Length: 228
Image 1 (spheres, rainbow, N blue to C red):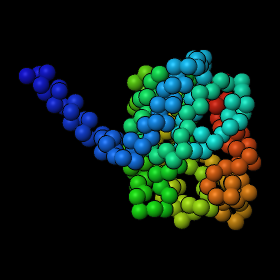
Image 2 (image 1 turned 45 degrees about the vertical axis):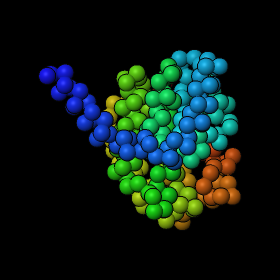
Image 3 (image 1 turned 120 degrees about the horizontal axis):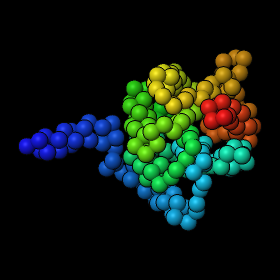
């Protein structure tokens, strides 16, 4: 009887997970091939246990100078274009579990874009908490850094909601052990309070070389501060 109760409670917890409703969605399953590429890399490459894993959406994937920018820290590069927390949380065990790492750095910017399918800031927070829970299964005290979603002209109309999601994750990080929030807004907003378009590619969404140089400074400063 006791085992049955435990089984039922476990099933209830799974059903209540913020990730459960996303697992079978086509837009989540569409990323299966990308995750398989990561798994292939895991089988063919080796990474030192002091590596820092960088994971998330296209801004991570397109960070071609990441290895050089983060030196002397070795890195594991795990970004895929278009990632949302709703699919990233589903795949998080397959992204993080195979690795030993000194820290994790995450950036995902596609859950709030100004579209009809946007998540609420509260949903974004719940999904991030789920990702952290996944990491904590094998890395109980490993520092986890969230790079705040940057303000961009292409999604400027959604900035109030994005900013609220950033604030919720910042507050959650400040109250949690070994969670860190890397603020970016002040570095990407001009004196007029609008995004600095010169830091972005022509789509006014993805960073250009100058933008990555700013990111490099912000991210590495926090890593050195925490990991020294």
